[in-house]
Length: 416
Image (cartoon, helix red, strand yellow):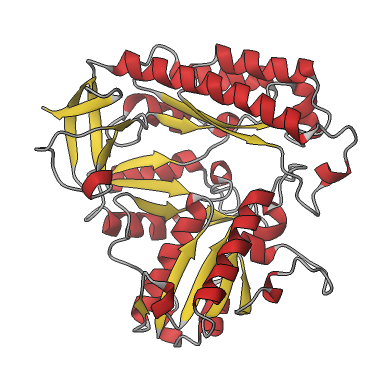
């Protein structure tokens, strides 16, 4: 069987696709890059925004058009969203789709692809990316009013520490960096009587030659153990935190259902990690144009972003998702105004990112080589993409560097 894999969405989805890739290899299937050469396509879907689902639908239709005999299985979040039998948006109504697999259920996927039982539980010695992805948990117990993920992924489910340490040790043989990912990573261990801080302590102690990185963690869920590692062990845990903000307005945070913090608590949490550290990277997600957002709410978000030491932002205009509580909220923001506010925040984020890069010029960096050929570049511990000289080590290498201004702009990592 020849299989084409296509992934949409976050790193959790990318990690799930790596698990699928290992199952297929164990079953003797052949992965092909060109869908026109495939018997089956497995499309890992995303439902976070209407645009993400629209892109998925376009891709599935294109697969069927380019190869009418292709059988398509859709997995991931979009395939798990509950839909009525007569809903025209059902994914199994798309051409070529013969099965839907909710989330990343490996047994259901094995049945859909008619894989032998031995393929279940297969693990890969290496992944396709320069950096490995280690999914530590799945699901989310919160109910943000804008988010469809809880409906698609279910409740928090943590993987055992021993299994994660074993997988990390295996991946560290071929990957210099391992990214810890999931749906609500900060809740890791709550169902097992543990914590994310305890897990990361175990990983850095038992897999000391790897560099670990957190993907997305709520700022107020960084406990003292995790904060200490972020501060004191930069060679083992990257000094970088992507901490979803969503809004700088307390009123909007309540409307969003994000009850566990307000703007002041968020600011206090990130400032204690970033203060006085030139090599600390701080990212966030921000939603512009959430229902009921006034000019004053938007101004509060701009002011908070301006004040805090962000080095990157993911800014999204609000996207209504059917089935979420936010679609029933009054006072929708006109889409054009939401886009205008998003553009303002992105411009502010660009200026802050440029200022951070300027401060890092002349400093030391811990660089991992990613990409290949013309797309080959380096990634620093604080999540800066840097150019590499011709004599830099190959992909999947890690080296100490001095950062300097590149001739065409940006930063160059010079090995030292």
